[in-house]
Image (cartoon, rainbow, N blue to C red; front, side, top):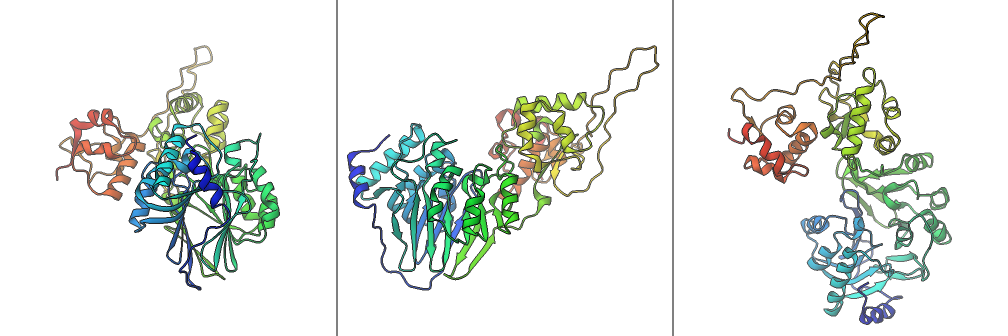
Length: 467
């Protein structure tokens, strides 16, 4: 660990008092759960003072989001624990913003990412930034009408848990007059039990560990009496977060939950007595990925995070061996070997037997399914049985009459028909085009995540951007 004696001395000096002046009563407090995929980053603003808790996984993603919001400094930055999905963007934050105080959990880690971060932190401390380790019992004033309380970790930390790194996340409670927010990091069930004595009624829960079933224990939910639960997670993530059991627990207690994968950035505004929650977009299941298990290609399944070559190979083998289309997702999962079935079970929300006829589309879209050839029947009892025919996929849309596909105007089917593409990459290209504007050249397709130079080289003979 990169932790000099200078850091240790500073840590001891500011553990218990951290106050800011020049506040006004009655101003709203805003918490924004940034949409950083399968990661965490929380922006908190009140009376001109700004706090950041975690910085996502991608190097500059959080920095870019924050700069677009006009942020240029932080009064406090917290790294709840040293996993990449919480500190991957933290070095960039330290390098790009003026920061008064930086806090982490004070437990060393061995990764290069963590050591690089602490090297930068030491440099910033030498230039005037203050450092502190979060410890149970600390109170950090956030103006005269709001404050943070650190609930975990204590000096010893938890050991021999499912994940000690997660279990020793910095857990904080934020009080704004009569409103309460519990910010959990990636706390484990053991952490939640340890902090129960310090938890009472709290309106908002920032859900631990992206909604994993290993956290959000009943005892915490019952004691907190939460009204709102905020979940930061990535669309179709390989972990299957949030877990269905977690969502069921929220529903059973009438806790309204919000999730960044479906709704984008989540914004909570407190006036000290009332809570208002808004989201970047409304939940629209028709816009979520839908993978038709009967007709999707290997590339289409590859849209789902964590689904690689071995899984897609198992899918294709199971599908080829099955007598006709699957009638349900459960039937499909039962036909797979144990490991692929377990992985796809976590992504069940994105699988269907009723997606569009190209195999990859959006939930709720009604479209006739393509004909899939059933295994041939035996010619006669005395003759050998005919080999079952392989599943036949519907042919993708043909290119334009001149043989070229204009990637700035073509629909998803025409782009999918290009060499090396398929529906998954085609949909990503369409999404990128809608978000970032027309492609300047066919080579510009490489800006799309998942489309590399090899793919572009294959399609150049049929690609154009000319009107």
